[in-house]
Image 1 (cartoon, rainbow, N blue to C red):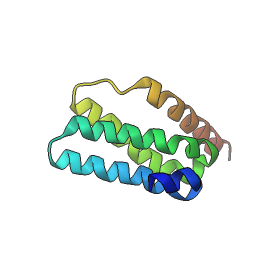
Image 2 (image 1 turned 135 degrees about the vertical axis):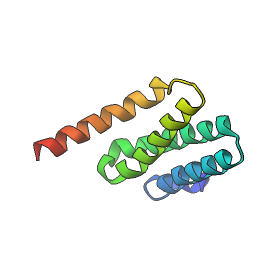
Image 3 (image 1 turned 30 degrees about the vertical axis):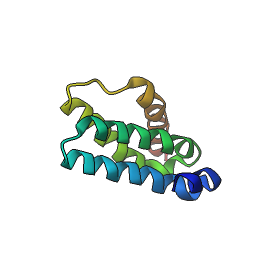
Image 4 (image 1 turned 120 degrees about the vertical axis):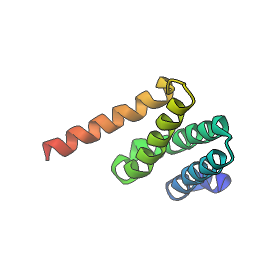
Length: 102
């Protein structure tokens, strides 16, 4: 999927991000929580460029990754990575304002 995501990002980046999310679930099930957190952060990074361009279409998938990432970080006693999440949250804020204006 990774090589296809490079060639066809709009089609395959969401699948790649979903794969990272699924892999994190496997890591959680096998008590590899740090690996799970890492996998979720990779999913967020992979999906972010598409999220910037097609925020509304990708928002549900991004919400899932971000929520799981934050929950898992807290379970591990870590603070979520602000550098990772700040640009994502900025887009969520813009989407929320657009929805409120409609």
